[in-house]
Amino acid sequence: MSMNSTAIQQTPKSQINFEQVKKKQRMKNFSKGMLFLLPSIILFSVFLFYPLARTIYLSFFLTDAAGATTVFVGWENYVTMFTSPIFLQSMKSTFLFVLYTVPITIIISLFLAVIANEKLKGIGFFRTIYSSTMGISVAAASVFWLYLFHPSMGPLNLLLNAIGAEGIGWLTDTSWALFAIAITTIWMNIGFTFLILLGGLQSIDSSLYESADIDGAGYFYKLRRITIPMLSPTLFFVVTVTIINAFQTFGQIDILTQGGPVNSTNLVVYSIYREAFVNYKFGSASAQAVLLFIIILLMTFLQFKFGERKVHYQ
Image (tube, rainbow, N blue to C red; front, side):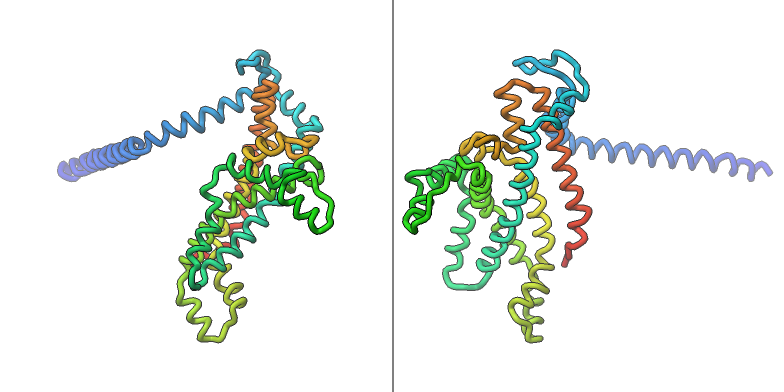
């Protein structure tokens, strides 16, 4: 009896000791993990989490010219934002801009990538040309297109005049300004998108094409049944990044049109900049920034929710 009772009494103690050792090991592993993550946590806190929290905080206040909070107004900045014709026009222009740029950029880049993936003599030269826009800054590209769009001596209008057509006010006509900015943006983004898609094409297993050739499949059948499905992970990434970049467009707007004419190219990011650093209304600008963050977050969520279903992994 005494031996059995002693064994019963010792068993819980051994279990407790085992649990304590296991808990200490988990804490030790957690501490090591946090130590490795600490540099990233600090960087994200300084450059992401704090600015985001500060922006949300400022969106509920009126501020002075230095950006210091003066009066708490609650949701007034958001109400004013959604009742402002200028901001509503800005939202409309932004979504139109995204609609113009994203599909065309991806279609052109995919077309060029498919061509550049062919094993042709001298194709390396064309790959360099197609990706060259990636190495040009937004400022330099915008100045280049500013010259092309010039109403009197720009090559585009000179070409139209040469064929008997009337010149277009590319950056001064409300019907054409947003389209002109979209052309500039598409040209600047093609280089990056092309390189990513070309890398995706070159990672497709060549045995799939060899099997299709044995079965007598044609070029377009292979493109539709092999290339596009196998490229879907890369396309998913490219579409997501291109949408986010389109919503964040700023540089070419600032250089080419400054939001004009008549706010037709006043995209949301440029509206935030003008509200904060021209009108010195940091509270209103913060409210717009919060809304832009929510829109991009929602678009990304929808992309992952519905777009990833069509992704095929090898």
